[in-house]
Length: 313
Image 1 (tube, rainbow, N blue to C red):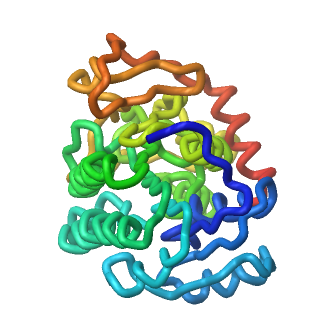
Image 2 (cartoon, helix red, strand yellow; image 1 turned 180 degrees about the vertical axis):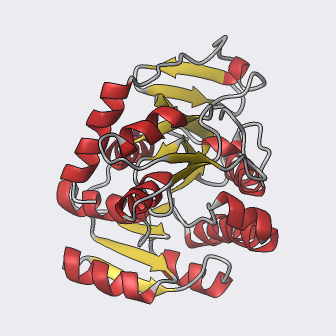
């Protein structure tokens, strides 16, 4: 199942739609496409109220509910053509501390979304994944890896896709707003290990990749955008530059890696490279021998931070 899919005139559901990525997807759909309606399913009433005031569209419908609740999911997806599954338990230390919650949201909740979408006759169901699902060592990564497998397994029932993202620059709960707060409070800026390497992508670029996957992807694919690599020590230094704030290393936490991986060697034979990224097929022979790496320089990191500030975050 594949081919071009139009977003215009469709009924669309976004789970976790009040989060950073979910909200950006909804805003882009309303701005650049012409959906019939969009249902935002989330469990945060205050964010729903704020989002309703900010976007102010008659095509936008809000539903209170948790993806772990089958009835809430069933009601949300009724009549939908496209479901974008952005709801997730994604804070690594929290998932390590409360693995049952991570399993409930990332695995059981994802299965609920798949099953109820199938029974409702949904055409396309896309999940947002993470590079931590590749060769996972954390609870969050393990649960998201199983989410990916669930979506791939449903490829014969309906059109299913995953987009495997790196760190979303400046998203809620990520390191940039945390470090900015520490700098504003006079420091120190705390970093687990300055040698850490992470993939970064902007909210806008990730939304582009998600919507392109819906429009052009084939069922069962895991699509991986090309992303820049950042030494976390360089990012920390850029954020304290000129402030007099110090940097303190506190040591790696449980569930963390020094370097994340986008695509595993086991996936290379099924991976195709495209101009905008990589496509991991569930069954087609591919061939790549590795993933190209491009590190951001310190001036590029500073420019990225300036763009983040200009965007009003």
